[in-house]
Image (tube, rainbow, N blue to C red):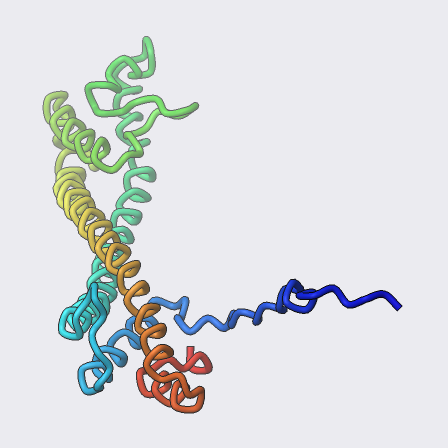
Length: 235
């Protein structure tokens, strides 16, 4: 029988405790906002101390700002939808009726079918087709050129002359401007929301750690976590 080596048991590394992999923070932005609001309210009413990097009052403002940013971002996105739908409707109308303008030019210019005048009318070649530019701003400008050229070439009496195209050009220009501004607002709102999310998650994660440190008894710990809104089963 071999002798027992002194200190052998001490040299054997202890089996590390398995980390708790249960994620207490929701992935859903709405659920995160709900948790942040609930935690802020509970923390203000609790004896649990503030964190060194964020006070209770500051966290309440942080949670409220994030919740508000979700509504702002959603509202900006919703506002863009009607504008986009109307622009698509006008695009179809333009595609359907631009051929009549090409027909007028073809009738008056046998030598090249009127293609030599296309640029003056705002018509360009994209791929294999001659049409108004597909980009919104460029198309809005091209519609203005189209109306001016129809007038200059005395197509006033034509069914698809300036009287037909002017209302389209006016509406398209305004919609293109508005949708561009809305896209900027939506982008800014989403950017603000994303910028607020990371620090909120950090604060919530630290708050969980603080609760665990201040309430070492597991039953008490679970009760406080639930009171603060950290309930994995609901998100």
